[in-house]
Length: 108
Image 1 (cartoon, rainbow, N blue to C red):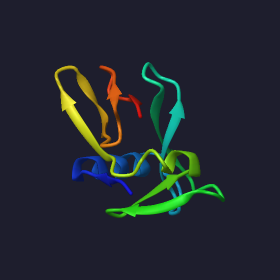
Image 2: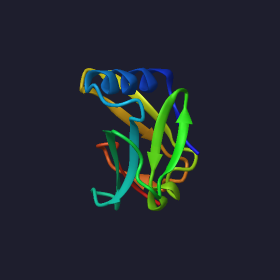
Image 3: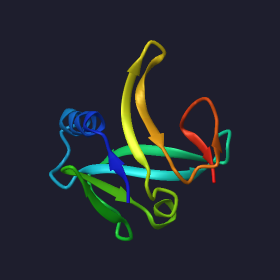
Image 4: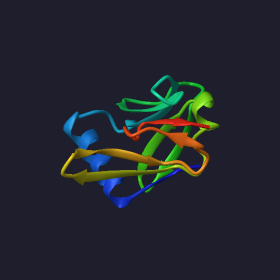
């Protein structure tokens, strides 16, 4: 489904440990209508999956994906980058036909 770089995995694991959440905790990766290009990504650390989530193990991180989002996340690579302009998660989506400068909004 999706991949995460070593840097992104380490950052997610840090967030999970900082928030002291349960062992079933994981990263919710969502695609939501909105943003400047039509869709935007959402990330959140959650205590556990919802009943209809697909749960994927990505390098030891539990990733929760709802059925709507799953169709847009095939082949996506999640990275965590630090630059002069700031730091944060980035998404490389091979299915995206366009996007905007913020890097978290895309068109399919």
